[in-house]
Amino acid sequence: MSFLVVGSNSFSGSHFVNLLLDHGHDVVGVSRSDEIQDLFLPYKAHPALGLFQFRKIDLNNDLDLLMDLISEKQPSHIVNFAAQGMVAQSWDTPEHWYQTNVVSQVKFHDKLRRLKFLKKYVHVTTPEVYGSTKGWVREKFDFAPSTPYAVSRASCDLHLMSFFKAYDFPVVFTRSANVYGPGQQLYRIIPRAMLYARLGKKLMLDGGGLSERSFIHVRDMADATYKIAQSGGPGEAFHVSTTRTITIRDLVQKICDLSGTKFTDLVELSEDRVGKDQAYFLDSGKVRSELGWVDHTSLESGLAETLCWIDSNFSLLQTLPDTYMHKQ
Image 1 (tube, helix red, strand yellow):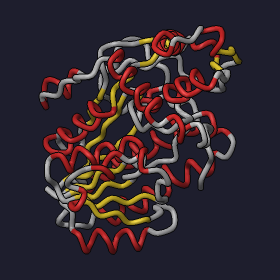
Image 2 (spheres, helix red, strand yellow):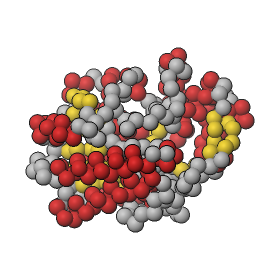
Image 3 (cartoon, rainbow, N blue to C red):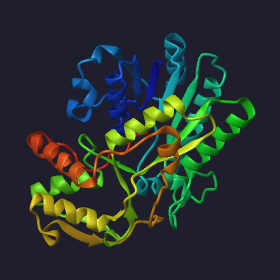
């Protein structure tokens, strides 16, 4: 297998590239921007980095350039992590989310479906398409999205299913629980809470942190994505999740305990954001039983590893932006 990874400089994409290099694959990565700091790109230190090639390509503006690259390299597998993320901010300029997550993706897929050499297209999507879940949900395409971000991702999933049915397009979907680990962008809840605990800054906790999530370590996510790329059947969706849930409040309390910080010193409660889903409980039995995937990193050990990364790079991290900066 040879791989082209779209969104290779994203948090999840960069760790997936690192895993592909572990397995000795030739990998081409594309992202719309270079990552300024190598500490956010684990593959940069990989001993097999010579197997990796990077091209700066923006899916919104450089589709012809991307297709020229794909025609040249002829990867057997394309894995797409690229999306306009961030749920709350999608309310501000929803057209940007629809442009990146629907329109540009549809144009891309319409060209990919004509390629004879493409064996598998893995589309990394999100449980946000379901809306707030009650109980543990299995993989389905019955959606109830509640934000512009979620609507854009649900729309793209349904579009891809239409291509699978009409053209036998070899798409397989992954929907993962909240991914975390060393190297995550500082505006995400776990690294930001840890950094603020060290800096003595206040962390705003939306809605008191009562929403409930599962958190999966980025290496476990990458391993599941690799198994899905290898053996997931076209038209199939796979949930990637632990079997454990936790409220955001309790998660932050764990970070306080790890960092030796009082909860009241770190946290300031704020109103909940618009359209926030209360819970995502993803039944991951399918990827476990059909593909033999197992998650290996507990939340406690993963949080400890992430805090170690924060502490080891603290002198640099404290100088970097810790809020989301929108790009379009």
